[in-house]
Image (cartoon, rainbow, N blue to C red; front, top):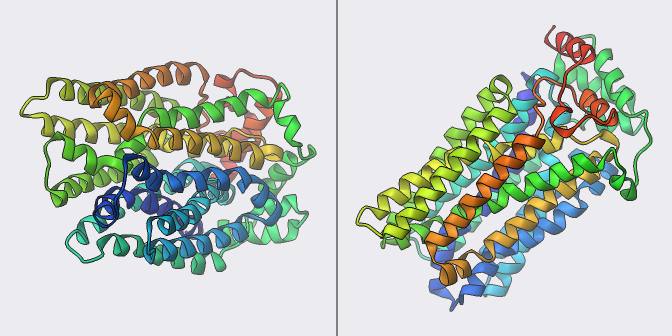
Amino acid sequence: MVVYLVCGIAALAGLLFGFDTGIISGALLFIEKGFALSTVMKELIVSSVLVGAMAGSLCSGWLTDRYGRKRVILVISGLFIMGTLIASLAPNVQAILIGRLFIGVAIGIGSYTAPLYIAEVAPLHLRGGLVSFNQLAITIGIMCSYFINYLFTNTQASWRWMFLIGLLPAVLLFLGMFFLPESPRWLVKQKKVHQAKNTLHFLRHRGNIDHEIAAIEKGLTVREASFSELMTPWIRPVLFLGIMLGFFQQVTGINTIIYYAPTIFQMTGFQDTATSILATAGIGIVNVLATIFAVVFLDKIGRRMLLLTGLVGMFISLATLSLAFQWNSDSLRWIAVLSTFAYVICFAFSLGTMLWLLASEIFPLNVRGLAMSIAVFSGWLWNFAVSSTFLSLLNSLGPANTFMMYAVMCIIGFIFCYYKVPETNGVSLEEIEANIRRGLPLREIGQPSSFTAELSKNAVN
C-alpha cells in the first residue's frame, strides 16, 4: 500500500531524531577521554541538541504552514547532514556543540513536521498506527545508536564514527522525500484542490475521494487564527493539554535513561565501558518492541488505557530503581537493569507514543501548526531542563532520591491524564475540532458522531 511507503520515508526523520539523541550516551564516554570535560560541559554536550530543538520547534509551525510539509522535511534533512559532518569532524568541544546545535534544530522541526505530515496523508482508520510509526522509528533510531556505540567501542576515534553513521539515514530521507507528494490538507489550504485530489488518488488508490476533500474543506471554513487567538477560551484548554503532555513526557525522567544509561549502569557496578554500553543496547531493543506493541494495538485498545497503564508501570519501575540504590545490595546492578527495562517498556507504549499522536490530533486545523509547535516546544524545554541537570542532581541528591523524584512525577502525571486526556481513537480530526468548538470538556472531545461513523465507513469501503 502506497501510504505505508510514504509514511515510512517520512518517519526517517523520526529515526534520525532517535539516532542523534541516543548516540551521545556512548559517545560521551569517549569524548571525555579525548577532552578534559567538567560535569557542566558534559551536560552541555548532551543538551546542546535540545537547545537547537527548542529553537526549531518554535518556528516549525510557521515554516510548515508557509512552505509546506514536504519542503520543510527536505530542509531538515540538509540540516542533519550539515550538523553530522561538523560534529564528527570537530577539532574541539566547541565544534561538537555547534554541530549538535544544527542537528537539534533539525530534530526540533522534524519532531513536529513528520508526525503532522503522516497524520495528514493517513486514512482515518489507519491514522493512529501510522502516526505512531514515527515514534517507532524514533525508538529504532535509539536502538541503532546503542548498537553503533557498541560496534565502535574499540575503534580509534570511536566517537567520530558514532556520529558519522548518522549521514546514511539523513541522505536517505532527502532522496526519499524528494519523490513524495505534499500533504493533501496543506494543498487544500493553499487552494490547490486539484493537486490535493491527485495526491489522495495516489495515496488511496480508489476513485471516490470527494468525501475526504469535503471534510478537509469543512475544516478550513474558519479563517486562520493569529497568535493572540491561541488564548481564546475555546482553544486555550487544548493548548494547555498539549503543553502539559510535553511536560509530563520529560519530567518523568525518560531522557535521563536515553542519554545517560551507560553512566547509570556504571554507577550500579558495570565498570567496563563496553559492558555498560551493551547493557544499554538491551534498552534499545525493549524500547522498539514496546513501541511496536503500541503501534499494533493503539487503535484497538485506545489511547487512554495505554497511557494510564504505562504511567503506573513507570512509577513502579522508578520506585524500584530508587530503592535498589537505597539498599545498595550486591544485586543492585541486576535490579537496576530490570527496573530500567520495565520503565522503558512502560514509557514506550504510553507517554512515548501519546505526545506525538495526540498533539497531531487535538488541535483545530487553522491553529494546528502554531499550537502543535508550542506543545512540542514544551517537551523540548523540559527535556533540556531534565537532561542538563541530571548529573548535577546525582551529585547533590544521590541516585536514590533523584529517581524517586521522577517516580513522584509519574503519579502526578497519572492524575492529570486521568481527568484531562480524551480518547480520540476512531474519531476524525474534523470531528475533534467540532467538539472543541462546542466547548466540551477536554476528556470528552474525542466523542464520535454520525459524521465520524460515515467517514470511517467510506474510508474502509
